[in-house]
Image 1 (cartoon, rainbow, N blue to C red):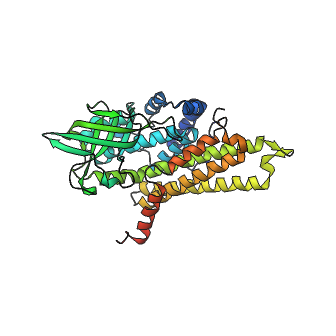
Image 2: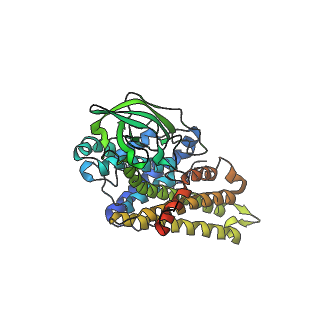
Image 3: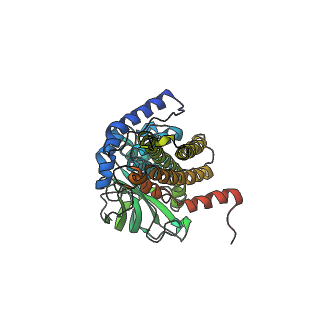
Length: 390
């Protein structure tokens, strides 16, 4: 059964330009994304041609400077675009979020010369990015990464393995964190590695519970040589760059989670109205109506939470705590709402004939990526009570 087109959400947008942008995204979602989502996810097919369209439409560089081809949109608007895309197909919304994350280091910490050389192609030239921080032995403890970069004249030689790389093997560039100095966070440096670099290769994509259309793979760096002008920021600044990127990236995951939850709610409401039992629609039964009301309330709360954090970011105020809260709440909500959607559909919800079961499988992933929800709780607690004593 094809996915339903996302139902319009009544949004408060700051400008006419933003309203036009959302209309464009909804049109693309209805015509190009939703009709093919179920089939392509089932086949494990990544819609690369769709990302070319998104790039040509200016949707891969929304929060970045217009000088380099970006849309120069506030995060308040960019995140609502992500939500619309994720409601149509999570692989697409998450893919845009990951590309934005991969571009962040260069756009924020790169030199003027680096930005002029690379950003236009990254923001609107059809390129797709990936972000390489995690490793097989360092997931949540990212500061213990082992991938090394060693100076060789004017170059760096990078050796190691990165894990859980979204777009691994299909991306055009990789933002790679590697150790250039002492153990711990101060010895890590960021590099921009092109996909055609000699010695860079991808393992076979992971076989995942959900998100089958979004490739996730280990990336092997076997003596990959990059020039020093592909080092981003100062030596030893890489971990700070990574954490800064993740603060914004968590808002992207929160917005995608709300989009996924909204799609599940829309499916549950439509089914409850259409399905008749005991001579009347399911939607007439109070127990089910209360479930729908709770689902909708948690979605609205999540949307308000990620937008509040985005508005802090847009005016230059600290937002790390609010980003962690948004990621935690929105992804937990997506898990609960998608599970309830399966329950409302009953036996049909457990079959692949309806998208509810796919939504539930996809929601689980959102509780893990870009910092597990246990890590989010640690981040929030540190803001409240200070660092842990040892």
